[in-house]
Image 1 (cartoon, chains in turn orange, cyan):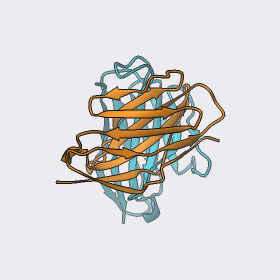
Image 2 (cartoon, one colour):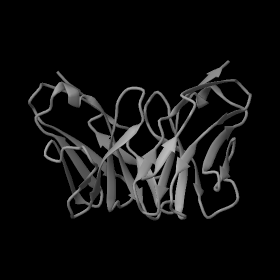
Image 3 (cartoon, each protein chain N blue to C red):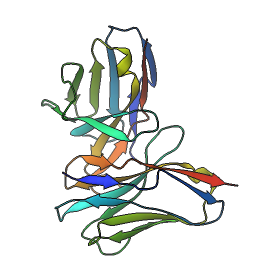
Length: 113
Length: 119
């Protein structure tokens, strides 16, 4: 069975600085997708970024980028120029092709003004 | 982007009553929807996968007779919590799979969630 681990229950970052959230996963499959979701206090799940496993290039969305290391089964999220609105729970998630999404335990990110 | 709605956003009920939560995909058709449960400060736990026109697939440990799921159309799935008890109090989130979404092929979009409180 696939598992997703986030080893940092809480993180904090100074406004305008950069922070990296860690995620590792375990799978025996070769075709899968990885995601980072943000859950602000409103509790609405927001897709931050996605990565297809077959793509070697790391995904980037504006200030958000990932470091995808397939062999190491690592998928970290880097947030550059952190803003107060980035404060939220961040969930790393895994999904094999056309299957259910499995979420990690989450990392609570605080942004210090 | 694609929108998924949930109704109601909050519900308070007495122990022993049944509560129905609706999940709608507003601008796309979703053959598959998912129901999650989230306790405070915890992650989302998948309860069941709902497929249009067929029976839902429940995760291990989820009581199918307590959490009834119906996916009668391509835009609507419902979760009914039967004979609710205080331990069923939680935040319930649905998501709908959009196979042709602009966010990338086969993207899941989440509803805003429903907070259920059972007294």
